[in-house]
Image (cartoon, rainbow, N blue to C red; front, side, top):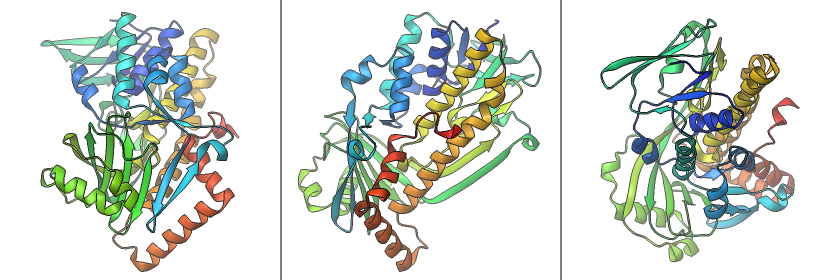
Length: 395
């Protein structure tokens, strides 16, 4: 098989790239090692920045997001037993975020690809990338007992942190930066109304908590837990009890409990690969960088990688210019490091660190107090939360 762009990975990043290229008349094949049902079963991010919303509209898949997504103009910070609202709309000149689950976004992109009759290979095993440092890169995989090969002009590595694309690059060609946090997030999804109409970020003596949502009838809650904890040890009743203990009285009274749909423990890490381009192979999204989920930046950084990459590829084919391709890695990394900084800072601010001691607790309280009572401090938090402008990195 021959195509212009071979996209390895059929998650949101790969699907969005495929859709943007299709709209520009560029052929692409997506190769995904999992089944469609498995891809849709991954419970991930749910807060979209304005840049990501605009990208979904540009790709022609934003209709259901606008119909069913929940636009949030602020969120609550709960610390020292009291709540403080961060008014995103006021602090950022009218900007907001959209609560719309990654599963729904992925389904919209899958449906658009199916409707357009675009080629996607699911359940592909032994996926491998070849000759990406030449003018004739290839992707091979096995399916139904046979080996298949796709020749292409470019390979887009959208296959996640554990994918084959980054792993195929010689260790001498990349630099990896990593910080692993000494705790994880125990997440639970339930068909219960959210405890509040906006998200609540909780800094408590018992640890961090987040009250999030996917719709007006589906809630997503998180608890900071030691990485030694096992999800099997957490019954639904134990989860709800611990969440109550980390909430204020208002939250305790308004919390509606019910059976879990899904429970999992996710480790927290900051990770960046440099560069993000190797010949005709490009890394995008989790294949190149991971952020702790505290700042809701993972999916949004992946979306902007895809925007930069699609723009560069469109420029290459339509204008015969390699300028965007040559600038891809530098441009992405400027934005990635700003997202990493915010996610690291917000994680430091909201979680209990085992070795922080009383000094660390007091410093957290002082910084939270400053942010909530200083217009300048609150503006910094809000500006980063809603997402920096797409061209901010070039300033």
